[in-house]
Length: 400
Image (tube, rainbow, N blue to C red):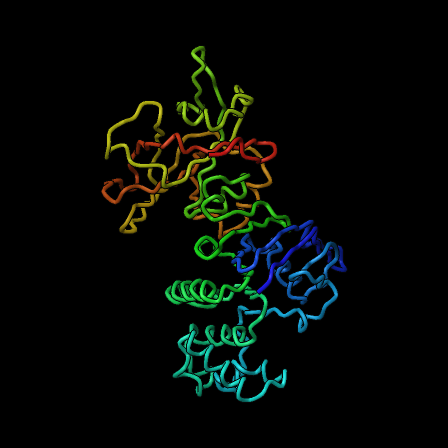
C-alpha cells in the first residue's frame, strides 16, 4: 500500500490540446479516491498519467516517496482494471488471473496459491477452469479484478470498470468493489462518469471540468457544500435546480429573493450561515434548490414566503417518491460557463423539458402527492436549504 501525490500535473498533447491543468492531489494510504466528471473532462487522462500510460507534460507524480514521472508502467507497482476487462479468450479463468505472475516468472506453487486466494475472495473458485466466453459480464469483471489482486500492488487504478454492465449488475459489482477495497485496504483511484458510483464508493470524490479540478471532498460535503455552480449542478440526481433571482433587503433588515414575479423569504438561520449574502443586496444572484427540498403544498398546507407556483409537465412515480417536472414563470438564466458545461453533459442533467418560455424546476414529492400532468402546483421549498452563487464567477456565496 502507498500514498500517492500529484503536484501541479498537466497534460498537453502534441497538437496543443490541453487535457489536464495544474492538478494537485494528495491521496493517503488506503484511501478510495474517485474522479468524476463529464466525458472529456480529463479524469481518465489523469489516471493514465498515474499509471504511466500517458506521459506527464507538467508537474510530478509520486507513488510512496518515489518520483515516477519517467518510470515505465510495469515498474510502478500499480494494477490497472479496465472498462473492457481485457481477458484472454483462449485462457481459463485460472490462467487469466495468474497471467501477470507467470510473466514475472513466479514459482508455480506461489502463483497457484495467490490465484486460489483471489478466486475465493471474489467468489470465482468454481469458475477457475472455465473460459471467459462461458462467464457473465459480472463474472468477467471479477476475473479482471482478480488479475489485479494477485499482483498485491501498492495501488489499484480503475478506469470505468462497470460501464459495460447492465444496471442490476452494476449495483452488485459496485457493492463488491467497495467491500473488496475495504477488506484489502489498498489505495485506489477510480474513474467514473456515474455520480452514483462516485458518491457510494469514494472516501473522497474529485470533480473535474475541462481538465481542471473543481472540488475534492467527502461525498456528503460535495452534496451539501458545492463550491461552484458546476459542482452543484453535477452532483445530485435529479440535478439541483438553478434559478436566476435578485436579492432584496427591506427596512426591517429581512431578506428575500425575487424570482420573477414570485418571492421567497430567507430565514434568519440561513443568513447567519451565509453572512456574505449582504454583499449582493439588489444584485442578481443564482439560487439553487435540490429537488428533495421541494414538496407539494397540498400535503401540508401553504407556508407564506416559501412557495413557488408552476405547471406540472411530467410526473414520474418511482414508488418511494414522485419526481415532478414543472414549468415555472421565472426569468431565464444568465450566461455562465458552468451552466453551459452542464447543459452539454447528459449525465449531469436529468431531462429538462422545454417549457414554452418557462423555467424547468424538478421536485421530488412524497408519493402521497396526487399531482397530475397539467395541474397548477404550489410547491413548498425548504428555504433553509437554499444555495447561492455569483453569476459572474459561478462561485458559491457562503456555505451551508
